[in-house]
Image (tube, rainbow over the protein chains, first blue to last red):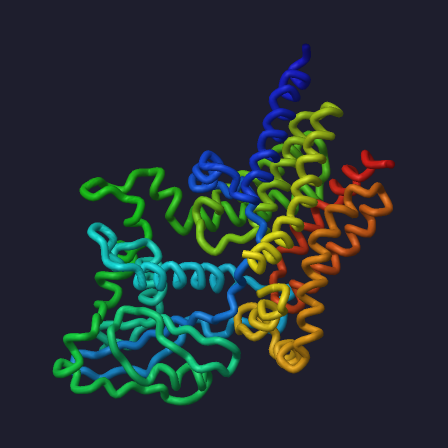
Length: 341
Length: 101
């Protein structure tokens, strides 16, 4: 039996089992499937919902302001206010950031609304820290001493804004900012800073404590207390390796198209797949069905190149095609089932 | 929510995934919005059925799927989906060749 045939006997059952798992995952079939999905860091199991069953019909806005030592407040500023660039059907790089922030803010809102429980302090939860880190990464005025943020919700383009949760307890003035996102002062008159209202505010110190290497550094979430960050942690969460992976992925994909030589194509496609998986682990928020389907597609293509036997090629094509067909019906079912339920 | 068309009008009204002009139309024409929502659901059920109906059905599925993803990219800005899903369609056409009734 040749090596290719032996590998075929591994590839075909593996792809078949993977597809069965994907089918079960669409209907959350069983505890084992739930566990596998929970630990699926590579996004290998596609959960293709297409906004079903409950779509996001609200916009979440993150606003922040700074306070100087003398108590003066800056106007509220919105984080990433321009969410719909004109060319977004073609070029929409902000979509991932926007989606990630929406997911994180939803998680923060859910945590804030939940009853307090020991060991589940909102201020130490990953979504809160990631939102905080993003807010604190924005530039501040030289005299600014502390920063405050809130998450507001609007329904409809001209709908009234309502606060959800934030690093504050009580505040005013931010609604104006959402009504007039380009103009308008949106200035907040904090009632007697340090006086009546101050005890009810949670002001957060600026980047010295909350930025890179500080309390809100996302990397801290992967670091055990008292231990230095390992080499693996540096590779996973450093900005340089992520940029190199994205550049390598793009370069390898372009080379595979420009020089379709079978001898090097497998290596180039493997680089594309490896870069994709690395970035999935690295990003891990704001992912959607297209990221997961891309994993399926790249695995299928690499299998076709790596195991050039007719049965393996057919199996890989079936694997990709069947996932493509599977994508639609579960979403339609969810839209109807929600109504029935 | 989807069958009544509320979901479509709600999504169109958002700043993140919505479309200002279409949101206005959806609000003023609830019947048409409901028809769009139900057509989307019908399309999602029809696409797998077409893919398993032989090569001609698969071509129809590819056309329908392309229209679906082009519409979501144009209206909602979901521009990664067409690239990835259309890339699976050659494999779907291959798969459909096995279903010749």
